[in-house]
Each structure stands twice: as C-alpha cells, then as structure tokens.
Image (cartoon, rainbow, N blue to C red; front, side, top):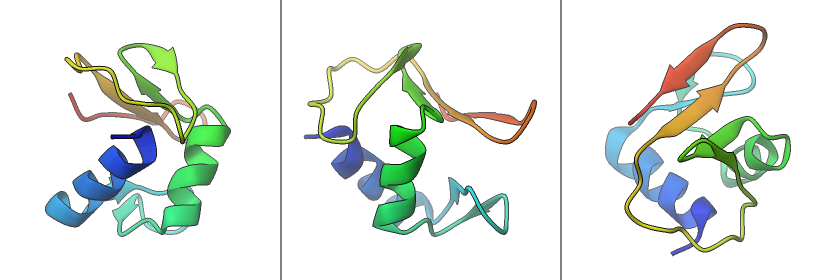
Length: 75
C-alpha cells in the first residue's frame, strides 16, 4: 500500500482529512492529497514521504501541517 492509497482509505473511512484550501476538514481530492504530500505537509513517523512510497508499518504518527502553526495529528 502506498502513502497515497493509505490517505485515500482514511479519507473514505473518516470522511475528514485536513485540507489545503477551504474548510479545515473535509473530502480532499486525490490531487489535493498528492499536493499536500509533495509539499511536505504530511509526515509519517516523523519523516516526510512521497505519494508513491510504500507505507512501512507500524505507523506511530501521521501529522498534517497546515498554514503557519496549524498542526493536525491523526496518530
């Protein structure tokens, strides 16, 4: 499973992923998820990742960085 596939699964199950634009939480599109990853706004286990990278389990943290000091931690 890639990072992008994992985030898509979270989005579909939870119906809420932090977004770049608009509402703080919502149904981010696939391209928006990919952009957030490419811009370094998503970190898994404290490390920046690429959207096509294979996910390494176990996952100890997933952090979304918003604008400025906004941080959303999922795990």
